[in-house]
Length: 347
Image (cartoon, rainbow, N blue to C red; front, side):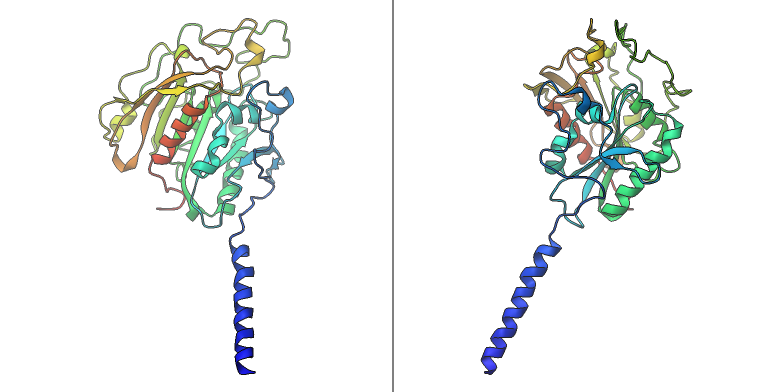
């Protein structure tokens, strides 16, 4: 009987291991954020419905009761290291439009990204939104664990880029942000001058379309002073919305980077998801036409101190509002994840 009891005990131990192992390996779920494949409210390749792109997201920020999108790998394990991105839409835009203008959600699994995409009910960012943005960041960091945030990036299109620049060195964000990606939202280290007629064209027959500057918070379109804290910086823009791209960068000089180096062109055979459908009658190449494939030129400033990344990416024959194509999107993600991070985790 003794051998039988020993065998029975071993079976119990083995069975308990089989039960415990799956529980320990269960993927985590972030509060209120559905994780599906494909991601919730994801646009098709063409003709994304208006009520989809105007969605503000399914996750409710508890303190303000405002909504946002939160995307992450559905197989995310506890203790896994991730790159966290707060992605801000431009003036007059929406959360899900931004989510498809810069569609890094398509690369969240491959590059282990957690992406929060908030929405301003005024469709433009002001100081009254800062608490909401801070609450989102705090919630995500608490759920993932600060020790698991490899890097934290701000990404912003147009006025969302100006807002990122305004807040990046604020008391809350200065100790957290490792990088700032400007999506046609202004270049640090020497501005790229705007092209002639770079603003939005009129919207004939659309009485509800916001006009430039209409109803904006004070200073919403004013470029903030150059930031004084430390972070990596990537600038991307459409060729037609700038007069020229500077060949040097004061931001690169700040970190002792090498001279600008041109990388291989980024070639896209597939179009982006979204565009400004309210400004196509007629559209302008400066503001942006319909989505289409294309090439992009990439320039990096190598060997920056402290592992910083400084880079410029120009999308050829594009304007301000054509959604980014897949290859240029992933190229930007690769630059982001290659930079030194660790402010939040304290590394």
